[in-house]
Amino acid sequence: MTEPTRIVVIGGVAAGPKAAARARRRDPRARITIVEQGELVSYASCGIPYYIGGQCPELQYLVGSPIGVNRDPEFFKAVKDIEVRVRTRAEHIDRPRKRVQVKDLENGTVDELPYDKLVLATGSVPLRLPVPGSDLEGVHPVWTLPDAVAIRKQLVEERAAQVVIVGGGLIGLELAESLLEPGRDDKRDKPQVRVIEARDQLVPGLLDPEVAALVAKHLRRRGLEVSTGETVRSFEGDRGRVRRVVTDQGVYSADVVAVAIGARPNVTLARDAGLELGPSGAVNVNKYLETSDPDIYAGGDCAQKRHLITEEVLFAAMGSVANRQGRVIGTNLTGGRETFPGVLGTAIFKVFDFSVGRTGLTERQAREAGYPVDTVIVSGADHAHFFPGSQPQVVKLIADRDTGRLLGGQLVGGGNVNKRLDVLAAALSLKGTAEDLAGFDLAYAPPYNTAMDVLHHAANTLRNKLAGEARTLTPESILEHLENGDCVLLDVRTPGEVRKNPPPFPNVIHVPLANLRDRAGELPRDKALVPYCTLSVRAWEAQRILDARGFENARFLEGGLVGWPY
Image (cartoon, rainbow, N blue to C red; front, side, top):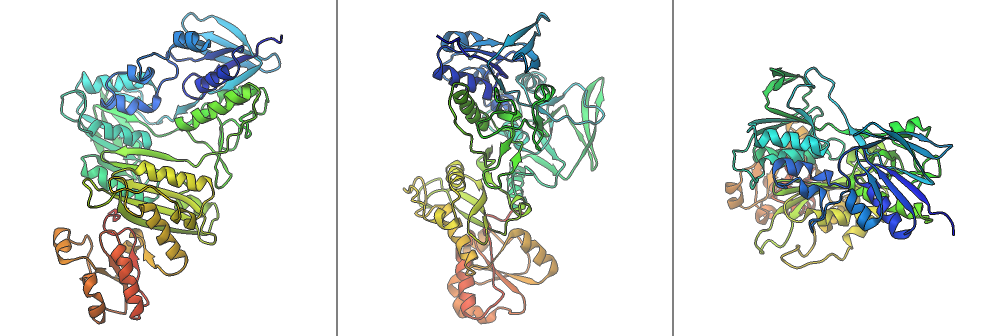
């Protein structure tokens, strides 16, 4: 009988434990060891903002299972026959001898672990803000469970009243929302919370500006103070404790500062071992997740990803991706040849009663990649208007103008956004077109959907644009036209709607859609005429009426008033 395969996994949070568990299921004889420099393994780091905010009141919930079983070294040994060494740091990989030098951080002893197959799941490390005062007490990264415990202690025990979050990305907004969301486990007043983002929009790189503006609008309505295009210059303190955040535009009081400005792959161990790094800075891997050394695999944040649409390599840090890669690695460690196809950058996050999702390329990314781009913004309802609780949603689709192939999409609104996001991600994975999406046989019943899903409407509107039938203006382009004074907005809602929700912009003519055929002669022909309504369904109808009456400059507002972000 051959000797059992010796598998060493460096990193014990997401990809590492998944690879080890999958390898154990496929090979009951393998000798598997996980090395983790922290105290905990296989914990839910994505839940950190919700532990800080109190939605997840016990730290135990992030390190245990739903049935109350701790995923600790004893659990891994008893259930999976996997040795887990916590508080143990991998110091060096000796590739010729196939040994990993490890150091016990409790007693300082150093020893070696032999391996036949090695897995790097070293994750990523947070970007630091290199400004004066970063070392003050009360300035925290939002990264590990100890970070979360420290922040929550200040919020709950010390009753911190003013919180500044530096970074308007996913983690920053999740934390901000959790701090202001009703239903917190403690009874104190909500803190005053401000998010400061150096870029000119929230969630830069993941959302296009008009979708990010919708998110910011909703957050401000719910009490969050949002500062974009503002750079932190320093932190100021009193007796060693942070008291103020100084930016290039102002000074803000702060009892707690949470820094969440991004991450970079943790590749020190791989680089020192002579493994090849990719253009993204992460460990270069092939489709089997093998590194430049075929006996060493890498997965999770430390490993380079390939985009499913552009085929370009990128750094993408996401727990869901890490787990999927871990399974592939576990299969291949034990004789399989499974491939990891790539990523779309699919992400979703919650902002109070709204959800925000994205997948594929943004409009900017698609243009930078060289695609001939067309886009559409469409508003609709999450389910039938006559069934209680119907909520609006806004969808943006990005497509190749020449082929109709979908390149990306973004969604924001109430109700079941994640359902639509997953449908769209599936369409992108299969290289679907707008016509394909329009033909999807999606589930319908009044509590769950409208007779035609908002994705159907978005796909059909995009098809109409690509065919030259629908002519539209985006909210951003409307602002430009208003500044130039070369357009007139045509409100085709009913008088009651206008009284209840007056127009948010000047230079508006009100003609209800039912009267438009008779009153078209009253409208100016020397400027662009822009019909709009609540969702722009009637505005599209108005454009066609005006087309038939010879108005060559009629273009309706994409997304209607529901999608107006300003």
